[in-house]
Image 1 (cartoon, rainbow, N blue to C red):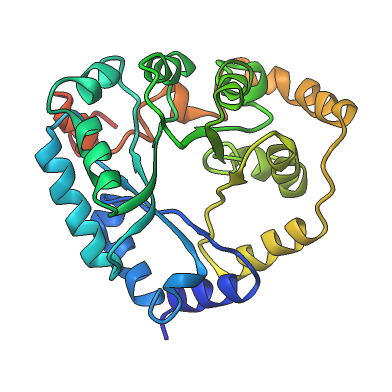
Image 2: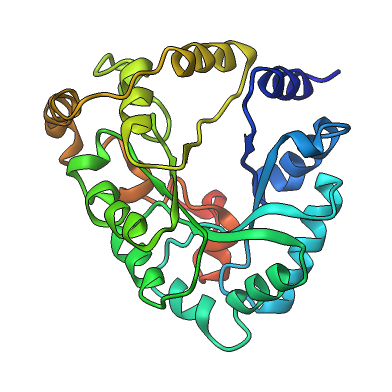
Length: 276
C-alpha cells in the first residue's frame, strides 16, 4: 500500500469524508492516486474534483469530467467545481455562450455530478462578479484565514454573501498557503485551523501531505471548540500588521500559486519561462 493510500485509509477510518482534488493537480496524478485509494470505499466519502477549462468551451469541460471520472474510478462526483477563477475576465468566459457553465448545468442534469460550485484565491471582487450572475451554485471555495481577515478580505466581502444566498462556503488556505507564518512563529497550527473552522463555513479544506500532519489535524479537530468573537478579534489584531502587505498570502499578491494551465490559456508564460 502506498503512502497516499495509507493516509487516505486512516483519514476515512477517523471520520474524514470530504475529499478535494482537481483535474490538473500533479499533472493528473492526484486523481489517479485517489482513484486507487477509493477502491471499496467510494460510498464513504464526499468526493469533489474541479474542472480546469480556464476559458475553453463546454465540450472541453465535459471531456475533463470524463477524464476525472475515469481516473477517480467512479461514475459520479458529489461535487464538481470550476477551478481557479482568478483572472478578471474569468466570469465572462465561464458564463458566455458555450462556456463552462453550460457543462456544469449539463453534468448536473445528467446525474454525473450531485452539486456544483467554483473556486478561486485571487481577489474577492472576482468571486462577487461570479455571484452577480445569480447562478444557483451549491458551493464556493475561498481562502479564509486570520491574515485574510484584514487584507483584501474574502471573509469580510464574500463569506457573508455566500451565507446570505445559501451557498455552502468551503474554506481553504487556512495556514495562509504555505504555512510560512507558522514556521516564522507568528501563530500556531492550532490557532490557524481554530480560526478558520470558527467561521461560518460548511467545511475547511486542509492539505494532508503525511500521516504526521493527518494525526496533528485530527487531534485539533477532535478537541475543537469554536473561538468566541473576542478570541477571533484578538487573533485578527495580532496578525493585522503582518497581513498588510500580503506577504503571507502570496496567492493573492503574486502569480506564484496560479497554475500553468490557466496562465497559458490566458496568454501568460508558464512559470518555467518566468525570470527567477
